[in-house]
Length: 71
Image (cartoon, rainbow, N blue to C red; front, side):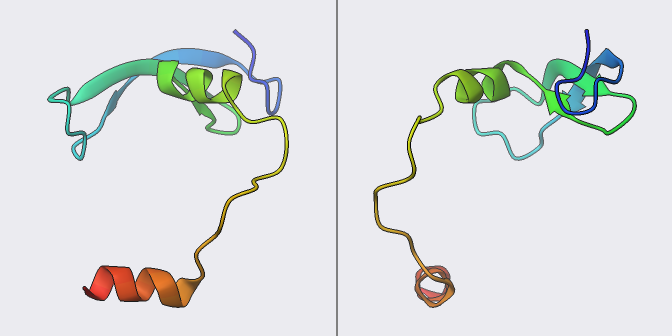
């Protein structure tokens, strides 16, 4: 498999996600030996389902996030 970012060699790898709330601690994916790009089924799904146009919703500025975190 070839990396889409740098055309380097992708190798299969096992990753640990300790913050996952589904109960699965590890997952399989591909990692590029040159640039470190990680591709797994979730990343591929999000790339396929990516919106075609620019974001049309409201964005939150930093002050809004600080208020949400402090609450």
